[in-house]
Image 1 (cartoon, rainbow, N blue to C red):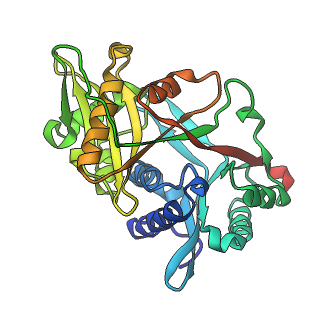
Image 2: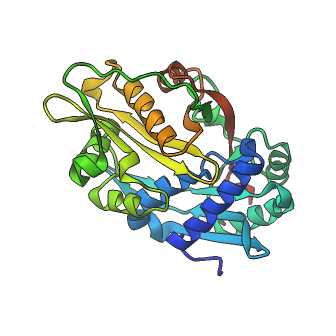
Length: 317
């Protein structure tokens, strides 16, 4: 494979396969943007609009990918409220199998060569001491914006599915799936929860085409007036029997009513029926972002790993 090609659906399946193998061997070393579900979600919602700014490289051993890098270069983001954001730096998603850790230097060199003249960001796994040492050796340091009470780092939370309580919705609300509610309702639910957002009907079509998407595991909560008041997608990694929630959102007019809690419990029970024994969900981990963390802790999740945001400025080489 050449170095300067966008991430395709075929690439994505290979990258997800590596995610599954690392999850089986060392789940604490799966990067936060390189999990089975996170890869599918990010590729699905973004490849139509942003794919031209993507480039990737994969490294193989014995026919299987053992490392990959996915660089996202400068591009323009258009949101549904008419606003525009210009992304001027570069960002790297990546994963290296722990049995081939030495390849990380090649991944870093590839990224630096791809993003010459740009500010560069990457999320490393805080538990991966070897990786942190190698990134530092290449001139990457902690992102100052990630420090402090309102930092932007994320944590991965986990729980088993052996004992999931019965969900309870307020009177008049009901659970739906995207298969039942249809594409328009699924898109509207996301836009209402995350406004302003770059999500579109085209983005949702990409999500539906992403490997691992199941409309029966894309959940919504419908209000009495027909509004889709909350939604989430569960990504089922059948090889590891793990269900990953990404994203999770609630309409601002329906928050603090227990909808997300009930939806998560309902989702975990559905995931268990589908064969999962374990669930994960990510959230912002800094003290100044307690809302999502409290929600997930309230339904039995606990922190498992966290990421370490690193940057290298354009002037650093």
